[in-house]
Image (tube, rainbow, N blue to C red; front, side):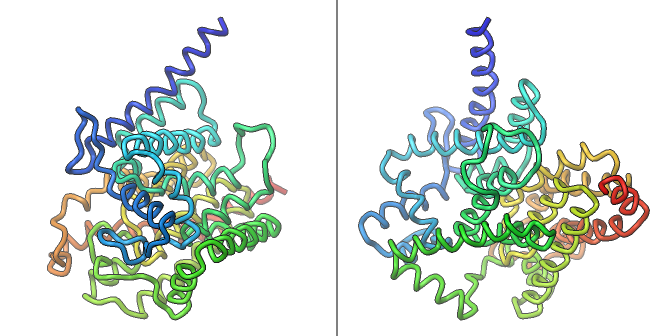
Length: 391
């Protein structure tokens, strides 16, 4: 019986992995399913960066697609530079599927339901499919925050390090998870917030110690206000406040950055308000969505946060019906990503008709609406009732 149980578990785990291998070989133009040759162009950038780290090269000015992350993140690419591309691609896909499954497990899914949900996310949900196709790291960033702070069943019986460290390390890789750490702090969970800040400093300090020139270059530019924005910010799949601003007005500017900052404040207020009413899983997801809306560039495949958000909203039957179904509609829109059917590139977005602008930008407006709605329901009858139950 034990052998049969283990074989069944192995089979359930294999299904989403096979789905990921299929997506890896077919999602991006230039890839091939047989012989398997994935078009994982971002993973190629990571491997190139790892090679330049080992050789002492300048990975910020390498030929091809640019490296845009902090130097600490470059250190994490080194293992993928040691192995052939095919091995690195398989390892990346397996780790990504494992991280996605861990998120769904934390949200209560087990056995065949976990396997089915993970497989469906891999095959159907656009941000997950594209993340796997590109060999991108969005799944790992979401998993870090969810596994750090989301209540629910754990794979390991106890924590290896204190709550907050995963979020802090993720912030050292890409700055957006800092919104989750800020939410924790302002929701009264001071220790996880401070642990996240400390682990961010330690990881960033390690980057300075091992890659001092690159670290001075990156953080110096950021301190001078260079956020790394480029002409691609207008691209249709940039689903951020700055992307909408640029497409509607035809230029980037301080106004868009100011609006992005206001959305950060709104998102943290919304997450804290929902947290104090006892809906911690929803609060974490709102903080995650906020980080994407406010980032200057958030490609559609960065929106892996819609996976835990969709599960949380589906499970939270006590939420006001209008808010719950609005949120699920937002998740469905992000999973399908209809704006990808529009013409894109060469600044054609600046010539969009009004209905094309609507299709391209409505998801961002809906995301902001989700945050506003969270504040509204937290101050209404539902908020008072849930607050009384939590007390």
